[in-house]
Length: 64
Image (cartoon, rainbow, N blue to C red; front, side, top):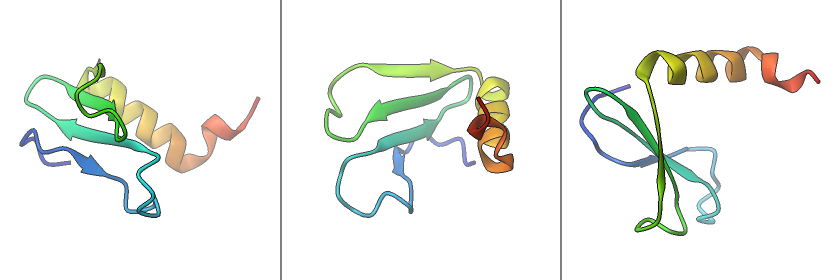
């Protein structure tokens, strides 16, 4: 993931605008609602975000 602070929407979002956007900054990864871009954002340490993405890709989060 590039660390340029540019907000990106998933290519799997379908273009309906009902998803989240992610931006990577030097010290954090930000997540916000694509329908409320001026609203609140969540902030994650880069290692925590990488762990979440890795678990999602492997299917580990699909288990109860």
